Image (cartoon, rainbow, N blue to C red; front, side, top):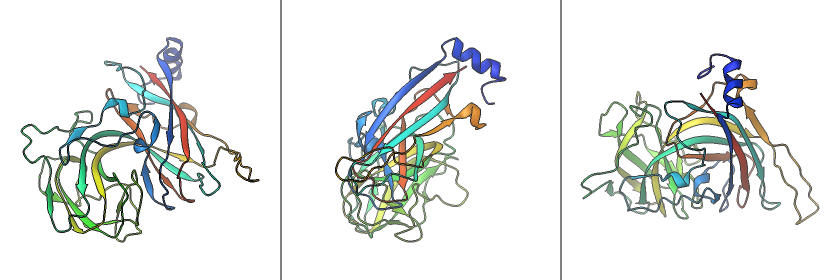
Length: 306
């Protein structure tokens, strides 16, 4: 097991107090459609909302106050996820939270306030910025770093766009395939699609052969879409599935109680997920059953280090 040579070392870490548990609670916002991805860091709760409200089109680090707190840095030791537990409760009878795919990511860098109505215009990043903020060096050469497009206001849908970026090899001027904007969505939703407007995908597809993204040079909306959006660079860390709703309703006769979803790494035989020092942790989620409006995502992350 990565980071531990034996179960004895695992037990020693817990007995030595090299472990901890942390809570999070996020409240989803506007109505989404089934199959659409949403950025839970944009939602209210704990940690505080991440609205990507920095200078337009200028690269900005994601503040650590916007991520799930998982304790202090442990260098030269390494910290891992021991157990991940989530519960989801629908806010009303019209929302559903079963079969939700959650993806835990490290949020790295954003380029906020791209104008989704500027059809046919090149929107260049960091214009006039003498020293642009660069990608944090948490993952070496940025292999595995993805781009996503997060709505910062209500969208209309129907637009298309491409993004010009520098890949993990340091090659600038790489241009993504054409992406579609999904149907009208609220702030906090991921607006990109592939192949067609209904082909929802959480991440921007890169040029063939590219393994990651270091920076973004420009975005071009070929067709007006309505709204504003931030380009966000993240490192996906772990998938997690919430199978059932965990709630009762007081607004009707409907009664529903479900189980939390828990992944215990050592007993499940899964590879450990490392939490590197400085990581800003947050979830994106995709519901397959319906809207997640006013639903709650609560849970705990238990860590261990060696």
